[in-house]
Amino acid sequence: MRNIKFKDFITLQRGFDLPKHNRDEGNYPVIAATGIHGSHSEFKVHPPGVVTGRSGSLGEVVLVERPYWPLNTTLWVKDFKGNIPRYVYYYLKTLDLKRYNSGAGVPTLNRNHLDSLPVKIHDSQDQNKISAILSAYDDLIENNLRRIKILEEMAQNLYREWFVKFRFPGHQKVKMVDSPLGKIPGGWEVLKVRQVANIYRGKSYRSQDLQDEGGLPFVNLKCVDRGGGFRIDGLKNFRGDYKESHIVKHDDIVIAITDMTQERRIVAHAARIPDLGKGKAVFSMDLVKLEPKDMYPHEYIYAMLRYSHFSDEVKLHANGVNVLHLSPDRIMDFKFPLAPKHLREKCADILSKTFQLSDLLERRNVYLRQTRDLLLPKLIPGDLDVSELDITIPEAKA
Image 1 (cartoon, rainbow, N blue to C red):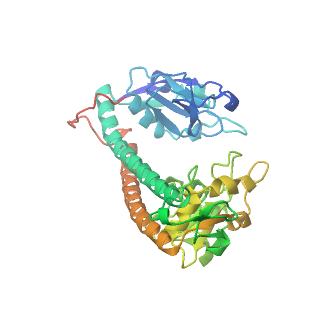
Image 2: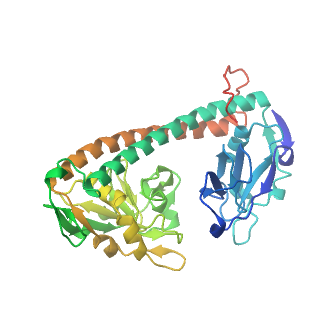
Image 3: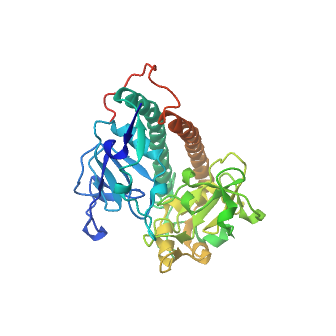
């Protein structure tokens, strides 16, 4: 390994302006300080790319393997100076770039302040080996994510086919009738959410209640993915007092009632609690727990919340100047066509198997991320010597 200055390792360049009203959805990812933020019909930089936050949010590092547009809130690697791009990506992830914040109000990373930073890097052969080791974990994670996405699409297609398009098994023999929601199959009912489920508010908390380790998992707003679904990387740990009503368990349903942006991509969206390994978790005041009554399977109610027009309709009632807030009553007053018991149960039985497989893949990803994150701070500084390892380097890797 050799000691050099950061300026001799890579060259960072500020990104490019692209106001939202000038963006045309296209094939090229738009990279913001927090990661991919939509797409555009044009690109500015050829791959491979490594991008990190410059303003607003610091510390996130993104590897891009197709042409892209880095926004002006980012810094992108203009010159890798002969270093392996994937190695640079992993190296930057170990630097804790938040430490170099130079902004008084808005977090800001000044690339010039990094130039004199001493860095210790491997030769190109060992850079390739380290990249191959860590990429093996990332590739497995990405493959599992693709499988999870396919399972999600299968669940969505099933619900929409049966309960939105009304093409359920035996639908040919059922006459359509008038209802407050329009035509629905005979024998179905129009109910409000409050008639099929109870709702519970989450736990208000202080920053000192949240810890890096120990306590119970804390399900918070960051655990709800954009458009719905659970993000396990958003979990925190909670050490504080709570009530039984603040507890969620495996398969419970939570809905976001807060959104930190005006885009409404989180508020009114639902997530299903996976197996978190501790039997229970505490959930935050930014969420509500929806607990279906005995006659209504969790899987069926969750699918209704995720795959019907529930979110599109309810999120419009959220309001606020800087932070959006949604009244739980808006959730409970939502009307939907309730299928007969035999269809609800048949749907739930199919979805249960789909969700179980999805949970298994997510648990595998948790293990893979943990192992990768244990290796990363040992490989990059050289605590683990890779020079004698016989590793085949995939040519396609950046």
